[in-house]
Length: 436
Image (tube, rainbow, N blue to C red):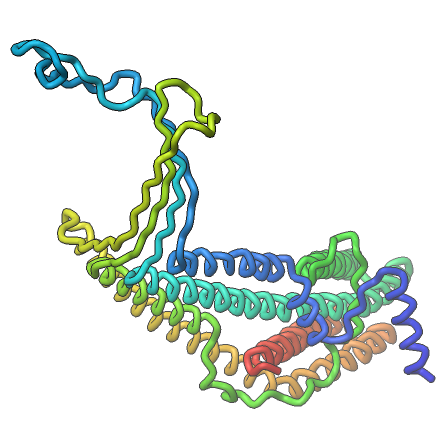
């Protein structure tokens, strides 16, 4: 019956536009599907995929149609002996060659036969897309880790509000007792002021916890792709037994996305070096052109009775690069230096990720070991505060004695909340990295 009522309540809240998250796994799923950064990265990947068609097009036949219109405003003139044209010997006749107006529409087809750089360009494009995929995996890992931290920080702030609320209730009770004793002249004003100061401090801590909860909740909304005006409800409680512990050390052989990204970048730079070397190789391509040319003394290209002259050519073009002013050697040298830098970055990234993984495992292991002890200490401190309050009310405890017990309880509360938060956060991070 209780489960049925809970289900009906959650459905009612969802119907009103409220997002209900029952576990950190649900929060992670929402972040993977709705986080703005993740969604934008996926759209950018789809956009960059079009570059593959551009690289592939360079290896396919190319065809185009173009036209040239020439106006020869000054035709070339040649002097010929007049006797060749029936004139007198010793005289010369001016002869002009060509006509003023020439119109040449042309169709051209080219086909690369041998071109090593274009083949490497296609491999570079594929590798660049793989880098984008690896970058998206890194982004998803970072968003998931941040979501896990903010999710549990939100639960931690809410648990702190609950505990601080109980502390403030005890402080209010103590304040009433002190006021009655002050009115009867049983305590000094100094003791009353000290009690009042503790009450005010506890109230301020409660407000700070409420502010931290509101901030964390808003940050979690952004990570989950929600608007700040949307309602988000977390039904999980931080003050609950830890789920089945993750075995520290499991999955150590798995490569972190950050390392895989560095490896992909190193492969990309090696392909760039291959392309620079490929520029030294000759290229061979086939071509064919066909043109119709009209030559007119007057601007009259629409008269179909005037002749058109066909011009056609087909052949092979061979290119062998010999010297580029040292540009190719410089580019090859730079590519080799970039590879060395990428290798150093890869080695350093592996060290950083190993250090981070070890730190997460050690923190989680210590939190699990201390969790039960801190919980017992926390529960014991709560009992001590109630006992001390009863003794102070009955006059068996002085205020300094009660304050000592209260301060010990605060320290136990802080240790317990911090330890619980560390346990849940690092457990979730390990689960993310193990693919659970």
